[in-house]
Length: 359
Image 1 (tube, rainbow, N blue to C red):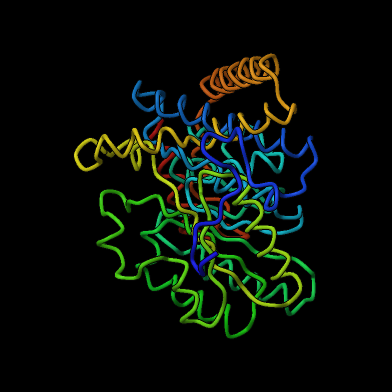
Image 2 (cartoon, rainbow, N blue to C red):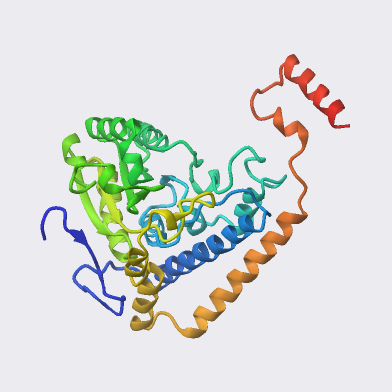
């Protein structure tokens, strides 16, 4: 295998695989990973429809990229921290966050964990060690490195994993984060989702490097490439990187080679810049279909299980939307709380003025 060859486990449509690279996973773990991918896909489809119907104002999907973040999330321990970008809901679901909590956040209502302060899809789950998603690109990278360095100093044995898109590698925070992590051997894993586009800007206009993985070499640590539509390959690379970081042997940059099958967001029209032939090519590599074929061939998954999962998820999403739409918006007071331990007099005066204006 050449240095930056794309590592793959599943062959073709997933009905065959490289047994020498197949990770040792229990059937229950395989099922949980697959179910999470399906739940993410179905939530994405419904979320985009809600935006088109005018019921929420924005949505960012991850169709075609489910294997990247779910595979990496499955390779972590519960005590490890995940610093996501906005296409990673599967990690939170895999760790126990509910679809209903996500739907409340999409609506920005009184049960939204961020009380309407964040854009839709910008989740935050403290209980699941799932750091807050931020709109500005790459801010999560130095945050993850700082947290990882703190873990090293405290000798907690934890690891921080941070995910970002190929466009984020053009931001200064990417280079600052990689350099700091390398120098101080912070227990951090960098997961680059190379989905070929930074909104409408193709990879060829992002970097002159042949790969993103090789950028790690300039900072003095390992970079690897994996098939981002092969969840077993992502899991295997992530597991090795996480445990390497936990041993104190420094960071790893993983480039997951994949494709964004939908728009950048509900505000984007990919028909203006994506070649239809690329969609057809990558559609045949659908990560969910490949993983399902693998599970079926191993005797781990059946048609009945598929039907039950889809129906249960459909009902779960529908019930979550019903509850979200029945939930009132956040209280006016929430605009002025969660900032100071004690609300200062000038904000109290502004709150009173706002109440009078509303009344």
